[in-house]
Length: 184
Image (cartoon, rainbow, N blue to C red):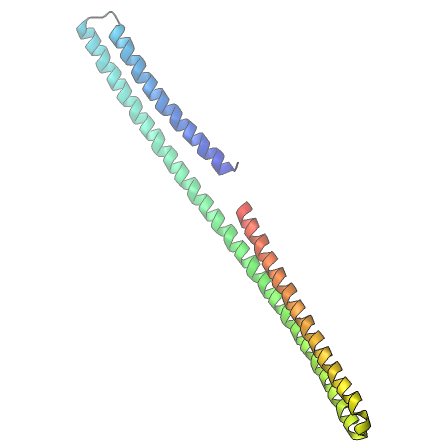
């Protein structure tokens, strides 16, 4: 149980105790007055005095109830402010992690693009060289073009895998942050 639930249970128990005490006092006083061997005037005076005492206690209990209500209201405000601060901190942490992951992913994409461009440039140079040599090497040129295609596909697959990993990292970071917020 959390600290807040314990306080809530204590408040309910205190409230029940106060109500029980009030009812018990009323019943006890009424029975004592009804079964007491006194004259009518004495009995009326005792009932009057008991009613005034009970009225005074009710006012005291009302004041205590107002004080407790104010305490609970202040506690709730403090907890709300604390929770808001935690949520803001976690939100900022998530945003920072997102930006870091986004930047890392962009760097990996740029690097992969550079590698793909370099490989594409190399293959283009080789293709030009093969064209000049002769038609005998046409099959070899076609193979090289196929190799370029495979290399580009592999590079694209690597980029896609990198993006998937980054997306998974982001999702895990969001989930961890959400669990941290729930725990607090």
